[in-house]
Every structure is written in C-alpha cells, then in structure tokens.
Length: 294
Image (cartoon, rainbow, N blue to C red; front, side, top):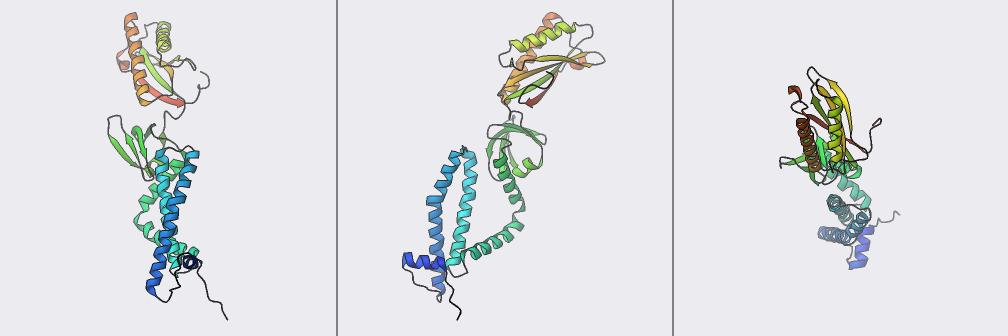
C-alpha cells in the first residue's frame, strides 16, 4: 500500500493553530494558504529584516545603500511567503511551490520588464563594485554631475547647471564612467602660452611661485612646469598641480584663482600671451600618487 502524502506546512499550521485538515474543502485550501502567507510574512518583517539591517550596519553601509537592499529582501520574503501559501494549500511541498511561483514570475516579468531587469542588475553591480558613491562628481557619455541618489533602477545626478539627471543604471555600467575624485588627490594641468621673445625661465618661475603660494595646491607632490609646445607664435608651458581630497567646487575655485594669479603676474612682468593662447588650456587627471618621472 502506498502511504498517504503529508504536507509539512499544513501539519505545522494544524498543530499550532488547531486547524483540521480540510483538503476536501476548497475554502479550507484558501484559509491554510492565507494563514501560511501571513505567518511567513510576519516572521520575515519582524525578525529577518531587523537582522539584515544589523548585518548591513556592521558592514558600514550608508542609508542610500541599505534602502534598495531592504527592498530586495522584502521581495524575497514575499516570494517565500507565496511559496509557503501554495504549499499549505496542497499544491505540493514548499520547494515545488517556490519553483512554480518563480517560473511563473520569471516568464511574466521577463517579457514585460526587460529594461527594468537590466537596470536592476546594473544597480546591484554598482552597489557591489562601488565605482562611485553619493556626493561623488562623475563624468560619462558627455555628461557630468554630482551623484545625489543611487537606487537599484536609476542614479540621479545634479549637473553644474543645477539640472537633475535621472540616469538608468545600465547606461552607467555599459559606458566608461570617469570618477575624478575617487582617489585622494586630483592633478590639474594647464598650458600657459608666452611669446618667443619672452623669458622662459622668468615665466616658469612665476608659474611655480603662484602654485607654491596657493593654499589649495599640494606641496607633496609638488607643482611642476614643462615646455610642451612650440607653436607658430607662442611657446607652451604646461603646469601640473595637485589638489588633496577635491570636490568639483574645489577644482573650479582653485583653477580659477591659480590662473588669475599667473595672468596678473605675467601682466606685471610684461610677459605676453599671444593671441592663439588668449584662452588658457587646461585639463584634469586623477591619480593616487605622483606620475612617474615627476
């Protein structure tokens, strides 16, 4: 004789709540399913979420990182509760029920939410790999701004024109993202153009003196100046300076003050800036230490 199959979920509910087996009654199926769902859901909210929160606190995650992870855990609790509900209502054991729920959800969601899933997966990679964080200034695909919020679907940036960009996470993982302030120092490069008749050594001394006098420019690694261009009507002197723990505001402020100081000294010393270099060229270069050879 083949032994009758038992359902462990319904047996637990019967023992705890005094519910008699009611598999011949469709309403009974529904009652057991609802009770199982509510029970698992309450346990998850009352115990699992707080435990996960304490674990994330021990890892030092900030509130912006914990929020989406809590959402994922909440959906997992609901998913398990649905599996328990199916099992309690006589639809097989809980593993079979979970597999059934997962297969149905995957089929429906896969077709309707392909882009959302891609952004969700990209968001997970952003939280795991941490290419940038809240408050970082990043550049990607011709755009730049300060990161204000990171969720599992989108990242929000505030541009320097005070515009809010809502960027799907997949765009940030599929493209090259530049994080100029990820390291502990930022290198700025400028090319000052002077005339062929001007004194190169004097111009170099002025550029170095103004860099050394500025409080926002680091002494170690120190500033440097190199002759990098011999144009048709000018000589290009490239200055390299370093800023510690920079933000976008620090970068813009320091660059403006430095270039203004050098230009003022050039005017005082009678050093000419030929027409092709009336607009001084500049750039940024992020690194954790001095470049080799400097």
